[in-house]
Every structure is written in C-alpha cells, then in structure tokens.
Image 1 (cartoon, rainbow, N blue to C red):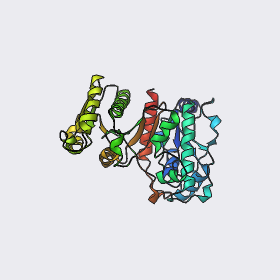
Image 2: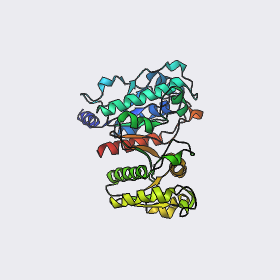
Image 3: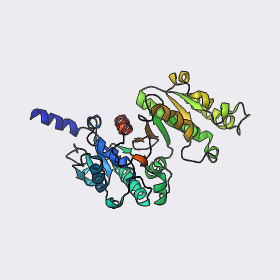
Length: 343
C-alpha cells in the first residue's frame, strides 16, 4: 500500500501535456493511442489527447490497440485533484463513422484545426504544461477554410506571438528557418535583415536555455557558393545575411556566415556547431531528414507556450494500418517536457 501511495504521489507531480490527434485520416490517431501506454512517456508526463474518442475507438479496433480508458472534459484539467492517468479530451468534432483513412477531407481538416485551437487555449490558460502536435494535412485544412499553411502559422496567430520560427532538433543536427511554407519563387521576397536576425536570436535563446551555454550557430547563404561575392542572386548575402550576422555578433551571439549551403552540412562543420540557420524550407529539411527522420522534433520558437511536434507527415499510405512508428512523437514529448521545465 505504501508503495502504491508513493507511485500515486509521484504521478501527481508530473506535468500534463496536451497531444493533438492530428488529421483523423492519418497516422495521428494510431500514434496517440500508442503513447497512452508508452512507458517512456508515462514516466515523465501525463499525456492528454485532444481529439475524437470515436475515431480513436475505430483505430484501436483496426490496429488491435487498447482503447482509451479515461475520457475527460476540459474543466478536469488544471484543477485538483491532479490528473494522474493518461486521458482523452473528446472534442466531438466530426462523425467518426464517416472518416475514411488516407483520404483528404474538409471535415478532417476542420477537426484537426479544432484540436489545435483547443490545446492552445488550454496551454494559454495554464491547464497544460505544453502542447505536442501530431501531423495535419495542409490540403485538408485548406479545404476546411483554415487560412494558415501550417502549424507554425496557426500557433503564432492564436498566441499573438510577435515573432516565431521553426526549429528542427535532434542529437545529430539542429536547424532553424528564416522562411518555411512558401513557394520557392516567392521566398526571396520574404527575406529581410530583421527577419534573419530574429531567427538567429530565437535560435540562440532556445539553445542557451536547453544546453545551459551560448550555442555556436552557422548561417547559410541563399545562393550557390553564398552568392560568390555578388555573382549569383540579387546580393542577398551582401545586403541581408551578412549584416544580420554582424548584428547578431554585436549582441554577443556566436554566429558565423553566410556559408555556402552545399558545404554547411559537412561533418567537419557540424562537429563545431550547435545549429544551422537556414534561409528556406528544403535547405534545412533535406539534410535533417536524411540524418534524423525517425528521431527529429519540430519546435516552434518565440511562443508564449511550449509547442513541439513530430517531424513527419500524415502518412496516408499507412494510416490506420498498425504500422505507425511513435519514435518521433515520443521524442517530441521528451523535448516538450524539458522545455516546459526550463521556463
């Protein structure tokens, strides 16, 4: 009995983490079910799935996974007695019987957005310590009329954050991004000296908090050979990136660049760096996913709340098939707990 009481008391001290179910037609529901019984998660937090209990029940049956045993209302969060068991926040956003796995759907996009919106509200109210997101389908949320291209933009808007950026983190490589979900032809127009400096500053602040010391940052150029002294591109390196790096160094940030993008990720470079600041999506995502596809975590920097995410998509091709690997979600929860503890 004494041992049981000790365990209960320890569980009561663990942070509650909101985990959004993601697109109902993707792998998010299966991943959500798997972490509800995952010892590596339950040893450090109490996960609460923000989603639809009906969808989770269907997926549990198809994937031969345990059904969630605890379904709660939002009022249950953040009030005594402390929540000690993993649970599901059933938002009842759609007809679970009508969901077709692996299919783009406005209804699923609308539901996925509702999960995010509700989890953000809970975090802002202090009911949960952090938010961890499963993947959404950008086409589905667009069909639903959601006017944001991705998670990062949703979190920025709903929290009122003045400046944010995406950072992908792993033990092998960490990268942050000046621009993300924008077409390549439109991307150079979104670069500015101020925006580049913002991302350098946010990256420095986050890694200082995580590592306990000022990080060493490398900053990529935009054009081949970092512009070759103005021969390539429209002098983005000379007029935007170099001044931003100089501004950062004047603040005491250990930043170097702009570096030729094709040489920035060489092992010798990575050995002396804590993170690389990238100008656009694929500049950082391609090397990151080559090195850390299963273990990478997406972190939104600059928010007033903690938000991390898996670094993979909805994987419609294996949705509801019992094949989804929870490794990235487990890592995202680990990072969320660490970041929340550091605040």
